[in-house]
Length: 401
Ligand SMILES: Cc1cc2nc3c(=O)[nH]c(=O)nc-3n(C[C@H](O)[C@H](O)[C@H](O)COP(=O)(O)OP(=O)(O)OC[C@H]3O[C@@H](n4cnc5c(N)ncnc54)[C@H](O)[C@@H]3O)c2cc1C
Image (cartoon, rainbow, N blue to C red; front, side, top):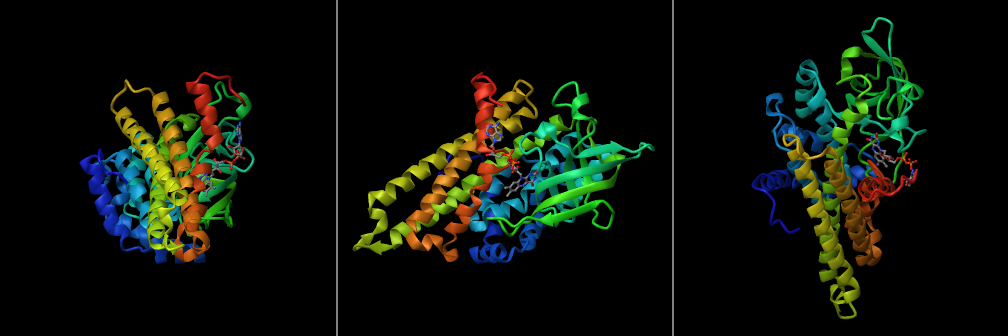
């Protein structure tokens, strides 16, 4: 990757994270993936050096840097060979804490954030539901305030919740006003930062068998009158969608960085193999049929890189510069995630094909990268929904759904 144009902070982050990831070779990630084993040593190593608080305020024990630096951190992680599994073991602790840091009470911040940063508690993000899919504004999981007013009762189901098996906390989006009673469609949901206490009644979870990133668990989570204290509400009741959007834009930047890292890692493997592998008396990379798709993949990654770090910069600047419209940040973050995910897919697919039969062998890692690079295309928002968003909000075309 071309490093010109990055800030000193970003390059420092890249060097420091590379020093940590160097201790976790590809064989570590292959083993975690094959045995579906949580990379807890990796999470602990990043927590030990304070990296989980990269984008959290210094007064809470964070590094006080921005999403621009956090994106670089996530890119460096996936690029090291850790892939999406390495990123997914970390990233909710970075993005899901953003709305908490902005809207949480002093008590919530002081009790929660330092323990997330030092790795005592891990976090997961509970938004997606099986029966509403991408229609987030129709979420059905309810949080009903009990008569005493000091607790809520949670009932409903979440799906695809990454790291729920190992997390102590969940940033939860749940309905506090029935959908038919809301004045605006964005109203009626609330954000909570809750304990996942497996000893309490009303909480159950089930692991989903999946294609890639097998080192990290993904789960169905079931709530049945699960009781949570009222002081776990973050920000205003019924304003949870607006609040969580703050974390979602950060998440899109991080995912874009993760996709880029995976794409660059795949491309590096492909070019190395294309130089080393000799068939018909010459390196296969001497054939333009091999070289040109790789050159094309590189340029696509570089273009997506510009979009990604532009979006992250805008996100960070918007925190202090009120002249930057929220809409512009959203468009930039969504576009970056889309472009980076597509560029990563191109690079990973071509890396497998460049390896011929060996592209299919676990030992060469590129099959793992290809399996994992589908995640940024699907989550946290699909390609189609980003295209819908840009068609409608930027191009002013009629809403299609
Ligand atoms: C590995 C992995 C990890 C995840 N981790 C988490 C997590 O930690 N927390 C969490 O909350 N969620 C998580 N998710 C969920 C993820 O965010 C959702 O899967 C994603 O948002 C897509 O939602 P869905 O699966 O319900 O798709 P659906 O809404 O069922 O959509 C299915 C397909 O239809 C298309 N589609 C739907 N409506 C339209 C339309 N109007 N126009 C065009 N196309 C449309 C979609 O683009 C998609 O291709 C994860 C998912 C995966 C795969």
